Length: 436
Image (cartoon, rainbow, N blue to C red; front, top):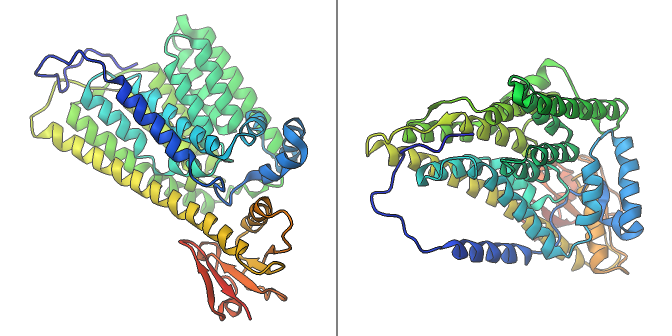
């Protein structure tokens, strides 16, 4: 871990003795409560229709159904099977608050490992905050990226209990299989020193077994059939990864200049970097952008942060300038992530209200795969006896018998002929038209 004997931004006045921890606690509670008051319709991404399955089968039955579905999809994620049963039974507000708390744990992990100096803590927070893709997990509760990062953060907090750290990393890997590369990378580093060699063997073994299990599940999966190893896919994924890593790279460089940081060996930092690179390599045949990017951006960013040791304070103008750049980039990332969450949330709730306001028995077309089925479920949760239905209308299809049509441009050109009627509703990402 990063040594604490640094002199960056040393206070010029004696530190205050009063404890202000309760301010932070009160602020955190208010944030959780406020986030929990948001509408429960979190998004149109709901892996395997988890809510509908839970309502139909109950928790134990739903876990069994998700396991069988993942066998067909080709996904190895046993922690998610259990998480789904426990998480989806929560009240709506609690579900939102839990996701925000998960992000808080992911942020707290790196902060616990850096020197307790204001400038360094600010830099570390900016490194995590600059990960634009991580905020998508706040609203997409069925995604496993943020859940896995939460357990990585817990592992980072377990500084003196190696078995807790290894267990947390394993749970992260059982949420999302590519997290297994964290175990492999960290274990490989631990193998170098005799005092930690057995821990290294355990980590590498657990990571390898998880990767092997995931590969075995993926061989005949309908979802994992989307893996492509051609040059075009790999180049596209590489470019997406460069874009995702760019803000964190800028923050790392700016913070390193501000704190006069220099390279310093840290086993955990090296393990996280190796794990992040392995995670990225795992994604290249699939998709390295969007929400998929958040784990490897976090792992590489935090790993590099731990491999840099802050030095003596630089020139007075250089430290605030570097920190200002780092904080500005992080704030822009937060704003971009918040805008994404808002637009998706407003679209979900806006389409819900719009469809509920249509004449009962209406037939509504939607050009977005998966979302049409999710919107159907949301409408029926609010009005179980409704005869209104939402159906998938692929881009370019005629969609006979429709009374209304939802077009979301991000999912294709839609069917121009179905957009000739008057506009019924508008949301940030989709528009509803009357077709006759």
